[in-house]
Length: 407
Image (tube, rainbow, N blue to C red; front, side, top):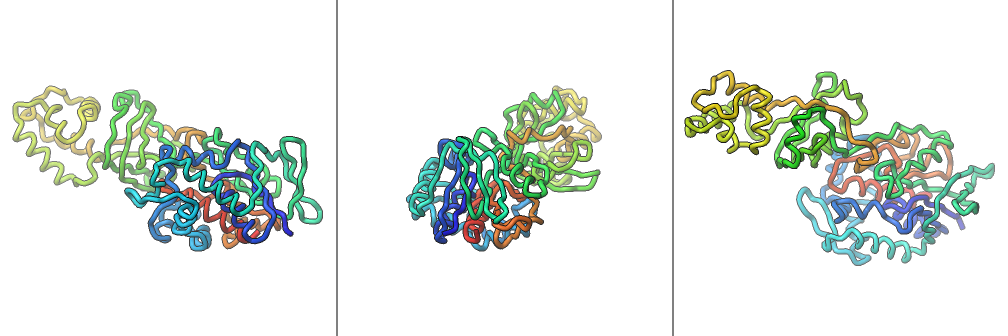
């Protein structure tokens, strides 16, 4: 009987272990924490956005790096398979805004409990509080694992599902990159993805706590449009966060700060002409009111104060005294305000890791290494990442399933 070591008890490792055991392999899952799925507890604000209910083509569209690599995995183990598996082990799933899927209980722990049942059902041995320190490739093609209690164990196959480097407190400390590099694999430099964006602007700190539901962020690389993202933006003490900012970060994380320019459109539903018409109408109706209070009908007061201050237009200026040139400047600042980009928050504070094992060195149909026979990869350790919405966890589950199926 073939023996399989799965290193890492996140969603990728769990599916890999369960699937391999179903194929008749003797499987041991190594988890350095006291329980499996620790990172799942913090996803979706503790509710666990386990997958997305969109079709496979939309899954592919939501991948930022190496889209084509995921076709085989997504079609082999789908989002429907994820939902069916969880419901089989007692967790009902609900679909919310943007097709995001959560447990009906809104408790991530229910997902972990279901995965524990899944592993037990499939007779997977789970060694918790067990850290793999070294993996040795033997002359006969087997692998010897040296673990934290100085014990060694030998296996026919190894699946690395150790995650990336984001949220290291959950166990994702980059161990897998060290193992893979030792076997000759190329590591695409890990970068923060789905990370808050830092801005260099002291006055912007006054906007801390403001949340705008419909805002457009645009990134330029060497003055050419790279990507734009519309959605919720939250102003913080260091810059911006929220779904739109987090998603945009995944497109700019591989470029140096001085090559990226950012701008914000506070009112993407208005073009310049319609916005000018709106402001003219407001000014006409409120001729004796000051400009700040009048514009507060469009955007929060703190933003208006910030914009007027930037434009050197007095807050208390009456609307009937606003010049055509000032009105144009106001409209332009609403539609196209430059943000002083200062990088991203650290990878430890990112939701996922961008980078990892080069996909060129992994067979996308099996998840097996093209360099070392019997070595497989699954989940965030691979250089594939996606936007928010349950896509990254599904990447982990689908690649884990494929690795387990073919090991």
